[in-house]
Structures are given as C-alpha cells and as structure tokens.
Image 1 (spheres, rainbow, N blue to C red):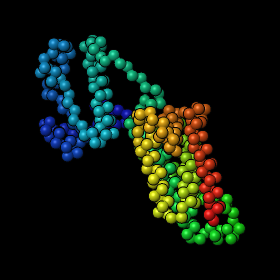
Image 2 (image 1 turned 90 degrees about the vertical axis):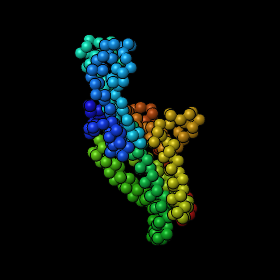
Image 3 (image 1 turned 30 degrees about the horizontal axis):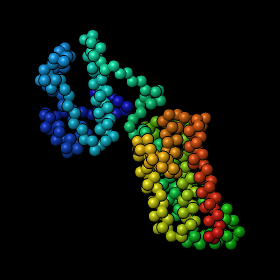
Image 4 (image 1 turned 30 degrees about the vertical axis):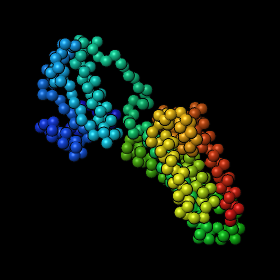
Length: 317
C-alpha cells in the first residue's frame, strides 16, 4: 500500500475475514481488505486465460473491500489509496509480462497546483469564510444593545462624541477581533492540518477581512434596529443557518437544479465562498474578472449596510 495525498493506511492483520469484519463493525477499523490465499497464482492464470478464465479463478483473483462509509472522508481516502496502489501494482505486473495493451487506456494528468489535493481541501476555504461570518455578525448584533443597556451611548453623546465616531470605534474594535481570529484560523488550517493555499496571502487576507466587515455591517443593522438581545440572536441564526446549508459551503451549488442554483447565489455568502476557493485552490489573482466580481459582491452590500445601520443608529439614539 502506498501513501496517497498524505494519507497512509496503517494495516492491522487478522486471522480470518470474520475477525476483520467484526473489527469494522466495532469501529476499530475504517475498512477491511480481504485478499484470497492463492491470489498470486489466480491473478496470473486470469491474465493468461483472459475471457476463458474459470469462475473459481475469477473469485480467487478478486480483492474484496469492506468500508464503514459513515466516516465518509476517511473511507474515500481509504478507497483512493487502494485504487492507486492496485493501479501501480497492475502496471508493474503487465509490464513484466509484456502485456501493456491490457492496461486501462486512460491517462490522467492533474494540474500542477492540484496534484496533491485531498477531499477536505475543497471545503476548507468555505469554512474559513463561514466561521468569520458567523462570529462577526453575532458579535456586531449584540454590541450596540449591550452598550445601550449600560448607558454608554448617553454618556458619550453628553461628552460631545458624535454618532459617527461611536459607530466607527465599534467597527475598529470588531475588525481587530476578526484579524486575531483569522490568524488563529491560519495556524490551525496551515500549520496543523497542512491545507494548501496557492494564492497571495494578502489577497486571501483582504477578501476574508472584507467579508468580516460585510457580516459586521449586517450585524450592526440588526443591533441598531432591535433592542432585545434575544431577538437579535434569533434573527442572526435565522439568517445564517440557511446560508450554511445552501451557500456552497457544505456542497457545491452546481450540484443543485438550476432554479435553486440561481436562487441560492443571491445569498451573501455564495459568491464569496466560490471566490475564496478560486483564490486559495486555483491561485487566481485580482486580475481575474471572477475575483473582481467576488470583491464587488462583498464591498457594495457592506457599504450600503454600514450606511443604513448608521442612519438607524442616529435616529434611535
């Protein structure tokens, strides 16, 4: 068994197929591989006899795999590792017998950037965006309510501080929090889990910070409009939970039928999630029209929401 995309199968040997499948049922193993006792002889006979091979020969030359698919990501890597290992084995076997024509007539060549991508690498950029979005919209939706209850606004206004300055101070504070949070996400994703990033760090950083500000602006609209903290939290989760399920974070929007596909692209997270994947996985830069459109889809609503939030904030204080 060979190492594929950073995943190595650590085998544990059992005396029988029954013991191996029992280990699978008790979740001591992700998968079980059963290789018949006379596999080497049977595979040679099967190659030599071709279409005239007996059923017993076919049975003895077939590897059986048992997988616990509840660990879906791990089971996919298990299966991929086995397929890659068998592909290399069969290539060497056919080559040694001068039977290269029996090889599968498909040659796959991956792009240089995607050579070692894993299943989970596709989802990591979306998780980045989702974590920042949820945290910032939640914090911002409670900030103004908390200070309104503590009477800080009244004291600030009496001291001559303008509404704009108070509002801007909260933006700066939340921005610092999002920067620290983003650094922690970088450490976890790239240092601990070794996820790929083929983009400019500052381009990725800029998009994520801009999306944090976008979430923050919507949170300030909620906080400046509603006085109850509980009501703010209910509205925040009413907005964010549907986006988690239908903005392309958990699965590609291309897998949905067209009416839903177009509808869900209107979510605030949908286009940014696609953009951050293009940046981190495909290495696109700001010269690409899709990346520019992604920045605009964040920046324009962000400015509009901040303006609306400021107007509501000034009228209610």
